[in-house]
Length: 124
Image (cartoon, rainbow, N blue to C red; front, side, top):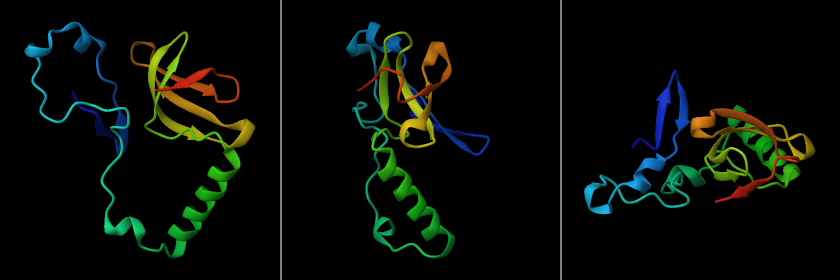
């Protein structure tokens, strides 16, 4: 399955199909290592440590301030579970602190926009 793909210039995060769990392990052929809990992580490059400048520096500083204010530690690409909608993947986060909301892809239940202060989400 495709973990991520680009659609109309936006990265889409896909969940692994639940039907993989119903198939015998010996009938599956994995082309890449099995998916781990944090399969969105990528190897760190030298560019990651390079100092930002100009508009990128301002945007980076704003993101850090918003992240420090929110304190919820939710992130795009994180796997979550919800009592009603099941397993999902956070595809977008907007707002901060008590106003933070997350857009989550719950597979068969579709995309949901949930208030992070109210929704009872469990990290996976």
